[in-house]
Amino acid sequence: MGAQIDPALSILIPPDTVVAVAVHVDKLRMTPVYQKYLSAQSFPELDGMARLTGMDPRKDLWQLLFVSDAKHNVLLGRGNFGDDMELKLERDGAKRIGYKSYYLVGTEEAAVVFFSSSTAAVGNVESLKALLDARGKSNGPPPAMEERMKEIPAEAQAWSVYIGGSIQVPFQLPGNLGNVNNFLSAVRAASVYLDLREGIKGATRAQCDSEAGAKSVHDALKAFVGFGRLMAPPNQPDLLRVYDGIQITQETNRVDVKIEESPELVEKLLRLGLGRQR
Image (cartoon, rainbow, N blue to C red; front, side, top):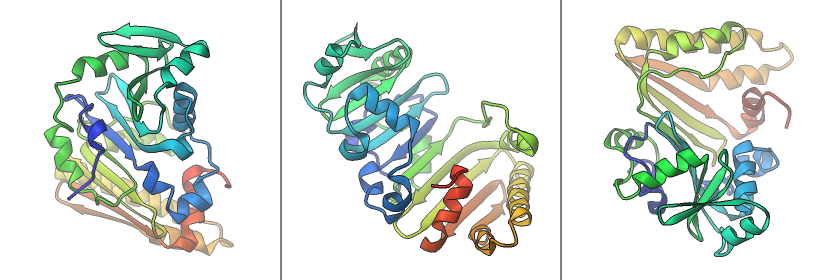
């Protein structure tokens, strides 16, 4: 069956989209991992949407979908925005920008457009205008993206698909992490998902330009995990169990990473990912 997108958001995906990141917020809120570890965390994207739309994303949001063509970036959302949200934002001082048959409310750098009381898009004005220009030309995700979505379980609460060619981290990374771009340049397409219903389960599948490229990605990822194991403090043996839950394999020009962590190891893994105590 594969990953699912709310139909109201699917028809807004521009045909030249190369990356999509989806979070099924309604399903995520029901997971023990979210309730115990993530509900109090601050997420800039959610906070930004809250400021622009006037709604509480932790209560009123159902699904988020970030889409990009590598030039224009838009965050789409389904939730309970309310029929008069546009007028409320105007009364609070937001600028109203007319475009085609829609109104963009906000500033040039950050604005929102409402398609209904339950569907909205957030981005800079240029990106939102590009989204509106593409409206009516979409039949859902591009075929290559739809094919990658089949690799993702329908029950996953968060997932991402990339079909845009060579991947590059768009900022300078410190120390040995600076070499990440060297092996990511071999990745041509990828899919990622997370399922937090029982501990943390997830997988990444990267399609590389060649078998040699896949080997470089595989070896680099194995080295990162091996380095993490070596750096684990002797008084924290559970960290070794966290790394045991990460499996990396290669098959011709494809690299798969699988993560499966039991509920009692979730906090350890989140500390590694969030880089701080909860």
